[in-house]
Length: 263
Image 1: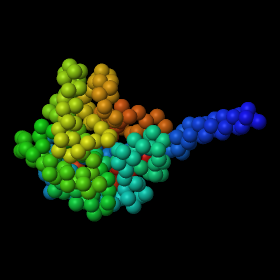
Image 2 (image 1 turned 180 degrees about the vertical axis):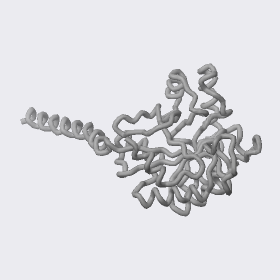
Image 3 (image 1 turned 180 degrees about the horizontal axis):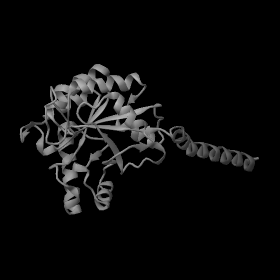
Image 4 (image 1 turned 90 degrees about the horizontal axis):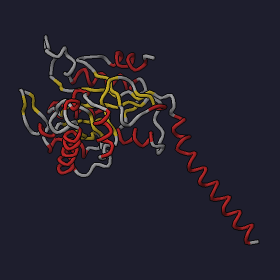
């Protein structure tokens, strides 16, 4: 009788273990064909200038940004955070039918002045990748965020602050140990000012990386790495090779959707 009871217990344990092992895979398969576009913005200006040395690739206007948000929402896109994406990749949740993420690189003051009010107005989540050495400063005529502004945005629950390096240099031109130390130090500074980060995402300056840098950062606590342009797909998503779509000045919401829908 005891043997039969033990067999039943073992069978039940085996069934439970099997179900638990299958569940994350089931959630992931539900999202298998989902595209994961990540939109990349940089600095913002009140009105677009007549000319721009960077061919309008790294500036935008608040009016255009708000139009982008409205059109994407009207077309069924759901703005998610990197934490939600990370949880979905790890089988802890399912993605919406049309997920989308918004990123801002460099940490310009204009993200607080122009963008943050729009994020609050539409209850939209976003991430800002800051260069920690530039926080609270004005460099080459560009004003950068203060830690107080970063904290206010983070505390709203809509904005995550991640690292875009400490010094904003070409990482493919430096020794791996120097790069590792730069990123570790940048996150140490971020956490001293904003609190512990459960998820650490890193966006490479200029998209410059090597296989060695990617491996070194992964070994040193960086959960997700961003360094290329293009589209992400859930079925082969790689936490260490995340792509984004750069949004040039006054690109319309319809044009963004066309870019997303390309095969």
